[in-house]
Image 1 (cartoon, rainbow, N blue to C red):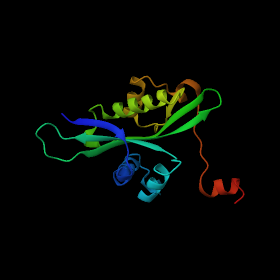
Image 2 (cartoon, helix red, strand yellow):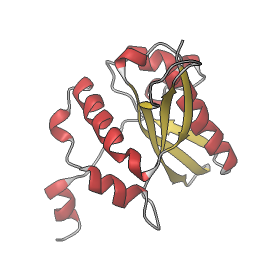
Image 3 (cartoon, one colour):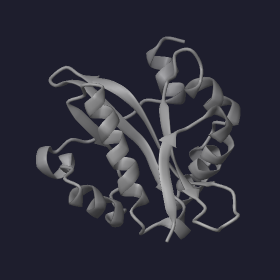
Image 4 (cartoon, rainbow, N blue to C red):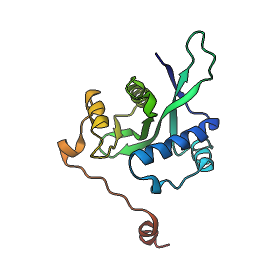
Length: 170
C-alpha cells in the first residue's frame, strides 16, 4: 500500500513537475507542444503574482521503509471568472505516474482542488479532457462532473502563436 499526501508544490518541485508534464504530453500524443522549461515554471508559479498554482502527490515511505518521499503526480490549476457564475478554478493538468495509477491518487488531487475552489468561493471547477481518454472521463463523471460537450454542446477554441500576434497587431 502506498501512502500519499497531497500538498502545495514548492519551487524545488519544478523539475519533477516538468518531467511529469512531458510524460503527460507523451501520453496525450502531443509531446511536440511542450515549449516551457523549469525556469518558466519557477517564474510563472512562484513569483509575486503567480499565473498558476500546483499541487503534488507525494509518496511517503511506510513504517520501517527507508526510501525518500517521491513526487508521483500533480494537479496544475488557476483561477478564472465566469460572467454568469463568478469565480471559477480551472484544472489545466492532472497526472499520476502510470505505476501509481489506480490507487485513488488522481481522485485525491481532484478533491483537493475542489477544496481550494470551495475555500476561495468559486462556483465552478472546470477541466478538459481529450475525447479518446475514456478512463479519465469515467473518473470525472464518477466524481460528479458534467460533460459540457454532451450536455450543452460547448467546444473549446484557442488562438496562439502567429495568429494571436496578428490579432494583437504585433
